[in-house]
Length: 417
Image 1 (cartoon, helix red, strand yellow):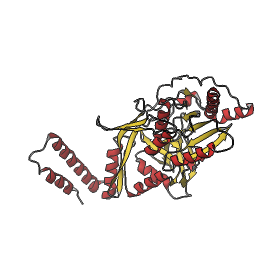
Image 2 (cartoon, helix red, strand yellow; image 1 turned 60 degrees about the vertical axis):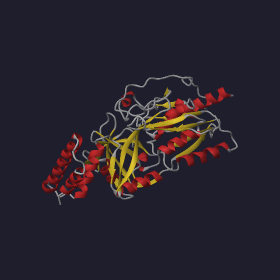
Image 3 (cartoon, rainbow, N blue to C red; image 1 turned 120 degrees about the vertical axis):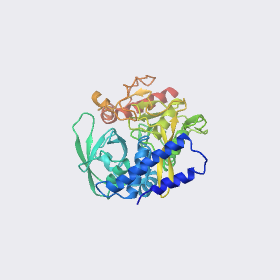
Image 4 (spheres, rainbow, N blue to C red; image 1 turned 90 degrees about the vertical axis):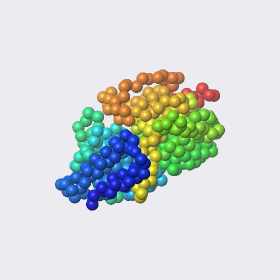
């Protein structure tokens, strides 16, 4: 069945006006080309393709060509997206994007099959069950990876300069606990894995419990490493928990007057206690909003390495039974800096102990291969540890960034006394 009627309908609507503008004529010309290509493919492609598949591919092609984060979602994908933001879904447990035809992993999600199997932020997936991913859309790649619960999938990984290697992962139901915590030396370590509908409430509950316990908490580490982001509202609410006043983030659209500013309300849930934020190349979007707000207001020093740099805003627009994800604006920190393709520079650059210089060349961010990070030293640069030597050595080996963050809290807490 041809779709010439779409063109005829378009002409009929335009004929209401007495004359076409040059822009309208060009639009009609391009729609005519689309109509001809559609019908050629429908009639002559080597395999039969349904109208629905062709149109969905055309819509995805149009949106994907704009930027990596705009896409078309059919009814099935749209329903899965709604489940994702609610905090439970099936699959491997990775946040992905597309780059030069391959799947790029923004970050694995904590306690998921992918994270347990050793998948890392910055990895490229080149094959799924031996089949190349080149030519796949994000939607198609997600559909393949989500599969039947309990069934295995083998992904081929390229990591830095290493030879490609395979990892076999069993699919599972991904139930995201967005906030976790532990106590080390009377310091509360708050780990946020993603920003979903439960994040702010979960964080407030944990902090309340820690503040009411017998042993006093002297400060907090907010760990946003490998957090791919999530809901804008949750990132604003999390930032607001630690701020007394001031702008958190502004969202600016295409027009000069299309600006939304989100500000903090009075009330710091930890009552001004020392706070340190940890970020890395897997900290994206909502994570960068929180880090940028706390950094600009000098509420918390940022430790780690430069963040991912996803500073664009997507909105979900329902269309029919599906929806489109469309980039409509960019995030700006309180100081007026855009996050997009730049990211957040830490106040103190702290690499992981096991990171080699060569691997630093292959960190994966919104903008490929950024210039080397400058180390903007502050008062935290020469912090000495007060922990037991054996514990110190173990923590340095397993998580050097957290080790430095804990030391920073101890120093800040001693200064306040």
